[in-house]
Image (cartoon, rainbow, N blue to C red; front, side, top):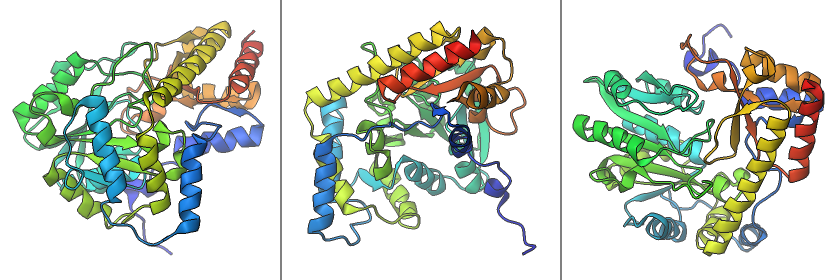
Length: 388
């Protein structure tokens, strides 16, 4: 076979996540690189899914998702954010948030359009946008505060700009955008008539009393914003691959018409179980956040004991460290070093930048804390011994 493949994907290296996970397995390292819990979520949800498979039917569900899950998503929007959402016209169920993002970028962008990304950004954004033959304009969030600058965003917007993508709570930074930063995005979107794609998969994982504010709740933003949620993140069931998108009918319809040519639909058994989970009482969500915050604090203390400067983490599964605090300068080399020698895997923050960005910082690494306490303690002890 001599024909070339689509360079948007074929010219890129393999994702950093399977790369580091493979190295961790090869070296017998504790994997704090890839962001998945090492314990499954609520047994009640899993039992509902299992029984639904046995009871059937196990056939195609509606392309827009089951009515029960769409109602549950609309009710959750009202319950948590006081958003009035029509479950029949303003909700789309997708096969994981990644597929939802792909459906949004492919459905909204045309050749010649521009999309603005805030770097660092989750790695699937750029190739999905480029696969739509759109151009990427990048606004750097400057460490260590990683705050959005209004002038930098404005400078990135041209007459070709159609879309801005934001992620809050933020992977990999553990940052939650505050009202001031959200208003910077909203103001630009209103003035330039832009769509905003909001990746909010960690919406329920915010710590220390911090609040997650959907951009959609700001004045004039509901009609131009979609927000993407994830059952995998909310219920620690990443293998379910159930996501949900909320937005105005024209955008949801466009996204649905793309989704039907990607995954078409998602398993009804998992949709039924997730609908039940979204109706859990406040006690579930409070325990969920409290337990993850405890794990954050445990790993943060362990990393500091090992000699790292640990940056603030307001949400998600992830802690960022400055590797210069342990005498290292290259995040890619550092992550390989600790995986092979300290037997603990992390991922480099530079992997969350576009390949064309020569100025990406290389002095930060991301550790995942959604693991059992004894695993976090052992990982911290290994790093402390190694850097002693």
